[in-house]
Image (cartoon, rainbow, N blue to C red):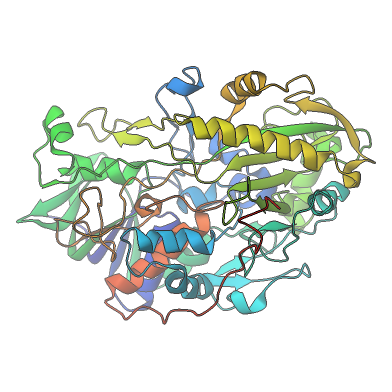
Length: 556
């Protein structure tokens, strides 16, 4: 096998987990090569936090993937942005930093991901973090202060941002100074991967420092398949500069290509459900039924309210306003351009008997679509709200054996009756929060769904037409015990049935975590790096999370 390029460890994907792995392996003196299909992340559309709606709609930075028509959403094809750029989706996401709830990780451990309980992963969250409270409270003892990943909080100057937390409190919910600390449940300030006014992506935090070392290199190429000889991964077949070649791995290949592209790559390499591979004429290397299965995501609705005072960000929603914000940011890295504007959060339980939050709120002091294309009528505000633990599951499969083809993505959203019940609850709870005294000085009419949308049937029609992905796909290469027929990787991220091959990204999540997925994806990279280096994992933590003592009998 002739190859121009080789390294001890070849990592596919310079995204959230891949960058963290590259950093830790290079730090340990290993020869590392990172393969990334996407281009540079330099430029204001990525680096300016307030410009977050732009890169996820630009072919330059996004894979441009779409789901198949969703049968329970009237046949809608749902966009599924994934970062095709250095930094992966951490370069195009909303920069919101949520670890997930402690119970999420305990569930991982209970279902076969041994060594991934909360006590096991908390030290890795601390290792990766350099957290700054910004004067907004928080649980310092629960947070890291020496890691590469800077995490900050917005200034929270907008009165609507503060009113949201106050309204949550008035509605009877707790206030939390740090949802990433001891107590997730409640309303409080959002954490964001923003530092000194710039998006602090995995590329900025991890990859750039790693590439300064002589033992870490980045190669632009499209990974076509894993080269496997005698049951062992020995390299990656890539298309580079118009030619097909092999990049050899002396020790291991690590796939960190996202929950949509990682299973695709495994299947193209002969690892997956044997019958599906046979359909596409692919020789079976390892028959793993779970590859591409267990697809999960978060859906959300935008509940929008008009504002009777000119306090929202709408006044900046002009060409001149945006230019002014952009210029200030360009020269000073300050002002509205230095925040993602998601500065207040909420995590609540939908009903009594639910042990920990299963609904998340993102509050935004403007009524606008997530892609930034449509601002609603004048001044307003909105809450993005959605359930955290849908039981619906989808799949990622191959459209063909051609590596250039997109995978077939079927989320199967809203396929369980409980999904509809959960979303109706989300709408009604949000209306109640917006109806509190804290919003009285600002509250106009309800823009969306609209005051006349009240019955279950009317709410369901609204949900079907307007529900959107929160862009949190995961779970398609599930981590579990080696005797679990649906597990794809073991507890050390090793692909079951193939030596010298690991997967480490959001695809290995056994179940989706509470909140946004960037933080747990980076944590997976951090912890996987220790497994790759055969280090003893960091000592387990003893911190016990707060669980609402009245959870069995009360919703709040």
